[in-house]
Image 1: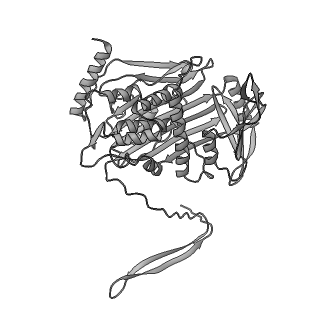
Image 2 (image 1 turned 90 degrees about the vertical axis):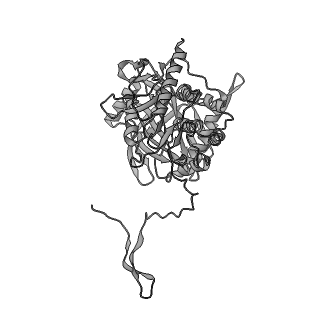
Image 3 (image 1 turned 45 degrees about the vertical axis):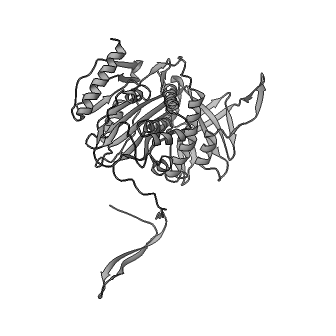
Amino acid sequence: MKFEKKVEKRVNDHLNQFVKNPYEKRRRTFPLWSKIAIPSGALALTAGIVLSVFAFNPQGEKDLNVLIKPNVVKVVDAKEARHAMTLKSYESYMAFARKFVPSIMAENTKEEETNMSVSIPDAYIAIAIAGIISDAKALTEVLSYLELSSEAELKEAVSDIIKSLCVLTKDDDNKLDGGFNTNSIWFDPKQVALLKDKDNQLYQDLADVFGATIFMEPLTTETAMKYLTENAVEGIPVPDVTLDDYNPSPASIMSTYTCVSCFSGTLAKMMQSEYESGEHKMIYHALQEDKLVDYIHKYYDSGYVYEGEGFHGAEMGIGESQARFFLPDSSDATATSILEDVLADKYDYVECETVNGEKRPQEYKLDIKAPYFDMNNKLDFSKGFKKAFPNMTDNGFASRLVKPKNADKLFATGLGQFSKVRFDYQGFFSSSVTVISASTSAPMPPDNPVYHLSLDHPYVFEFKDYINMQGGGFRNVPMVVGRIIDPVYEG
């Protein structure tokens, strides 16, 4: 019997057993593990295929019930050619970015006052997985949002994204560049029952195309952090994922994306020396007050300069990647409006010349000073998610894999993203986690208009009580009134 047939038989046998008794933990595994290591200990990732139901306990912590764990880690030499993404996949990815980024930024606080970053690959893949495992109406919504026409195109697009963007390389100095992705689907066996897929095609697609691990375990803060820690790149911290552990979701999707680009060894050492000596500090004109910050100073003999409507910018190379920075030219230009133009390629190169009949950007000498920063993000995309995917947020979520153990249906409640982002003398990194959660309760009614009241400047207050009146009814009686000009609190 061929190896593929043997594996397929094992998958079917164990899936059948699992469907019969999803609560039973099994330690039957197959020796299909491999380990990939990068010299100098920069990265050590364990990857493998375990096509069975098993429990693992590497650190003496609580076991996690795993249905399928695919091999998704790929580390290649920096000189190896990257996977070529199809035009259709690229257009879908960019269409998603142009819709998703402005929407999630608009939904989360005031962009003018708060640092914020949005990770695109893990959000795309999480929404794609949600479409694949949900009913036909939800899949149609996902295809429309991603500007694709079929499930086959969706699988091809995700495969292209993972093979193109989720590959880590190392140079001669063992510096990392690129990104990697993990995907997982979590079910609470106390709330949902696993459906039996007769031909296992959906399970195979989730493992082979999406690289998705399926857990029969509720996604909580504890299980999420355990999973993230075990799949972390050495030296790169993982985001803090905080979930509702008192009422864990019956079904969740968690997609991660880590992006890292490092300056070369010599350049990084020089920049670190400049940082430690305090040589490179600049006055940053923040919204509230000016502040002294550290910055990277790079001078280029040539480079790219951009001009858009209301903004200008330039490009800095970091490893095999590029960082582009854009400054507003007017008060009308906001972070969202600039990003919308940048993602839509609505900008010009400053001056152009024709070389061998091809229009190319004129090369410029660049002198860039970019401040260090690090941030922690927690973004919510519930309202926009409901608007974009009304069927998924009404019923039918994950209906191709599980069904609730009560009369209700599963419906998606929204999308959240957690991330850590840093830019300094080492380079740039972003570690992001996107979570789509579901509920079995009755769907929430449409959102009513919201009246916003933020007491962020001097205000008056009144404390009152209600008293019963003779003959019936009640009236309110003011008890304390006052005004707050400068709130001071001592705990």
